[in-house]
Length: 400
Ligand SMILES: Cc1ncc(COP(=O)(O)O)c(C=O)c1O
Image (cartoon, rainbow, N blue to C red; front, top):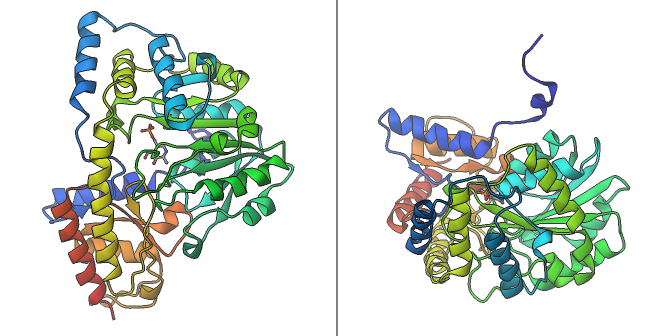
């Protein structure tokens, strides 16, 4: 009998972590590889945030905290939701976790009964279906298309809803496509939900601040206040303040749900790291100068990458509204051969050949539930991106 649980068989290893590791292994073996697989800003955490953490250590803020987070952080989160999203939450409606991923985990564990369905537009972040599966739920992936900007339509949502649907999980801007919903696009979705009162919305707004041009970020509870009572709004400091390693995420929603997640967390991780929580207080309450600075750099990189990929044979790359990913289609490369004589049958074949002969690591679209595409993260120094896109162009031109 295996020591491993049956539940574990429902979980896949993360494809993005696997791709990152493969690139690392090739590098360690002496190959020149540029890895564009990583999902974190390449900037350092802002100095004011680091200083707040140091000050917290010196003050002795080094003990267990309340399970759902320290009061000053919950207050900072309440203010953030008011200031940036026009949402009125009370501290009792807020929970802080060890990263947004932890929040997602506990939200599903606290609400899913076996067989409950979660609607997830595809392409989706690799972890969603696995987290839902661990909670014994069923992911109902709804494919989107490049023609409608990789966004779920009201009709597709309406058709996907069944009596077993518990959640619609939205992620805007999206990992992996970078697509972000306009207010009108969100309103079309929330209108559908108004006529299905058993369906709740979980919205993963972790890339909120990474939107470009004059795009205005909005979130479901803001667009449709009538849904406040069945919306869990998830966010965190990882991407907005280059704080991926600090592990602070948070959510706001109806108090009974937050209380259930608090109870679960109390039997699990307890409160997140005390020092990281004080750092997050400074991130949210202190100067916000880092946000427009990093946004400007990311926007210029997005424009560079989109332009270079659209000058690449067989690739089509839409311009995403946000995040730090592009999701080009490789449909025209399918069926072609590499100079070594290997036929590209899938996006995984393309990605593998690009890594092995082109020296660039990206992640195949099939890992995100929609292909043939690949995800390229442009959270890398601009000259490196330029070189990588040049290598992709050369690789694609070599296909026959
Ligand atoms: C869509 C999405 N949600 C959540 C997370 C995880 O965020 P955190 O670092 O706060 O756990 C990521 C990280 O890659 C992400 O891409």
